[in-house]
Length: 153
Image (tube, rainbow, N blue to C red; front, side):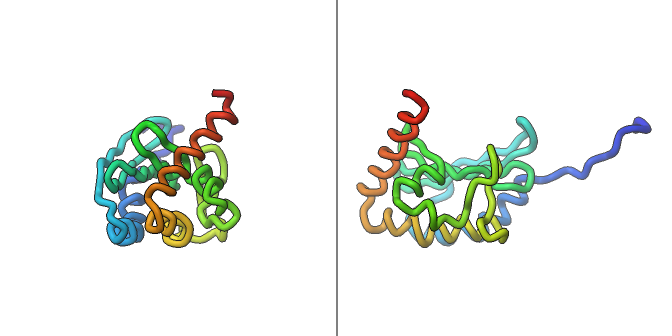
C-alpha cells in the first residue's frame, strides 16, 4: 500500500438495504406487494436497489452507502418521488422520511430512516391505496404532472 493511502472500510449498501427491508417487507407484503428486482453496484459510490410490485404499481428503493435515497412510486413510465407523492396526498407536513439534501434522506426526528419510511407507508400512503387504487394512481399521475410543470415540460 502506498504510504499516503488509507485503506477504507467497505460500506455494504446491500446489507444496509436488507436490514431495512426486514422492517418494510411485512408491511408491503401485507398490502399485496411482492418482491421485485434488486441490484447493487458502484456508480458515484456504492448502491443497492430493491423494488416491490403490486400489479403495475411499483415502489423503488435505493441505498447509497448507508443512507436511503428517495423512494420512488411508479405506474409504467409515470414515476414520482416520496416527497412529490406526499405533497399530492396533502401529507407532506406529516412525513417522517424527509429530504436532507440532493440524494440524502433521513428521519425527521433523527431516528432510523427505515422506521420513518415504514411510518409514512403505514400512516400516509398505504391507506390511500387501500381506500381506492384509482385514487392512488391519480395521485401519482397528478404529482408527476405538477413536477413536469415545475420543470417546464
